[in-house]
Each structure stands twice: as C-alpha cells, then as structure tokens.
Amino acid sequence: VKSCGDEIMGIVEKIKEIEAEMARTQKNKATEHHLGLLKARIAKLRTQLLEPAGKSGGKGEGFDVARYGDARVALIGFPSVGKSTLLSEVTETKSDAAAYEFTTLTCIPGVIHYKDSKIQLLDLPGIIEGAAEGKGRGRQVIAVAKSADVILMVLDASKGDIQKKLLEKELETVGLRLNQSPPQISFKKKKTGGITFNNTVPLSHLDEKTVMNVLHEYKVHNCELLVREDITVDQLIDVIEGNRRYVKCIYAYNKIDLITIEEMDKLARRPYSVGNAIFYY
Image 1: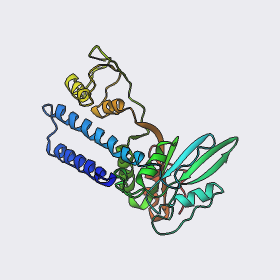
Image 2: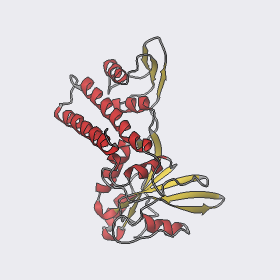
Image 3: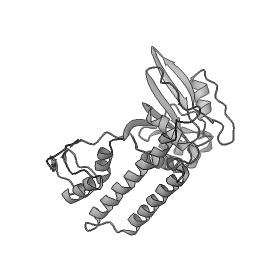
Image 4: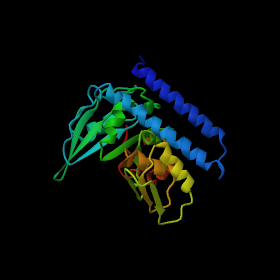
C-alpha cells in the first residue's frame, strides 16, 4: 500500500516530467494545442497534490483558527522577514521574533481594532520554496492563506525581487490568484447536448481546438461555455477547475535600512506596495 508521502512524490515526479516536456517544446501555432493539453494535465495533478493532506486529517496543530471580526488578513513571507514583529506592533498579540528561521511554528492570531471594525491578523510560519509540494508546513500555511480576505506579503527589501517571485509562484501553483479578477467566462456542465462554445470577443491566445482538447482532458463532454474576454488557456483551466481563490495582496517591504533611498522609492511606487507604511525590522 502506498503511503501518503509516496503518493505525493509520485505526483511531483509526474509534474516535473510534464514541465520538462513543456520546456522542450517550442512555442508556436503548431504546438499550442499540445501545450494547452499539458497545462491542463499539470493543473489536474496539482489539484491531486493538495488532496492527500486533506484526507490524512486536519489542517495541522495550531492552524485551525476560528474566523473572528470583519475581515481576515494573512501574513505570508519567508522565515525571519519580520512578520512576528509586525503582528506585535499593530496588535496586542505577542509573537516570538528572533534572527533565526522558523521562530513561528503555529498560526498566531491577533486583532486590529480600527474605528468600529475588527480585523483578524494571522501570523503564519515562514513559507519556504516548495511549500506547494508539501515541504515544511507549506500545506497548512497555504490553506489558511486561502481563507483570508487579504494577503499581506512581507518581503525582505534587500533581497530584490527574489522572494516576491518565489512566493507568487508558490501561491499561483496552489490556486491563489493575487490581485486578479475572475475571467469573464460562463461555464455550465450539462448531462446531455454536447459542447456549446461561443465567444463575444476575438480570442488571440487560444482557438476552439485548444478549448475542446482541454475540456476533453477534464472529461467534460456536455457543457455550455461562453467567453466574454480574450482569455488564455490558463484562465480557461482555472474556470474548469473551479477551486481558484481571487484575493487582494499587499506587498510590505521590510528591512529598508539595507537599501538605498532610490531603491526604496522604486519599491514604494509599485502597484499594491505599501509605500507610506513600510516598517523596520
């Protein structure tokens, strides 16, 4: 009998094999149908990758935090970027902070009182690269992040864009869509009648054959699909999967004393970045 760990490793290997095939495949008109199919297969495997943890029971000790107040904000970041310091500064909650990794081992909740509102702020363990594959406590961290109304991504300003890109990739992999709107697609499964596909705008990223290939990969043979914007195959897959979470993300750059004024100015001018509330570690 395969253990949960073996099952996860098997799925991860399959994903890597498909990613390698995609990397070898040249992108052109002749291969776009095949690449679309490979993307659908990866999306299905990634969904399976998140399932074993749910079957094995629970979110993990310290992570099953009851929702409280008017909104929930999840602090996401690599270890030792200052999440605990921020929580302690803006709430009355004590969260251990130190200059070594993985100080926070469980999910620590705090509450911000703003006028008549209560905002729940969750300090999560530092997320590491590979969290989407179950490394560290990545699964539990991501599960809580998916329940949040806003994600506050805490970044080390001295690391450039490395942390931001890695975290965005990890969150994208598990179905979180940061600062995006759901694509304007109407998708309804039916029991009979075949596939009805219509678009109200010209599609420059995919054609009907690609759409049909992706639907058949998901074993969808009867449905109504109406596309109202120029979507990509990734957005089509998101809608078919039906488990994506569209959430606002604010980027908070910490340790700004380690960069120049010019670099700080560039960071503060970026979209969704906190320019006037960036804090020291």
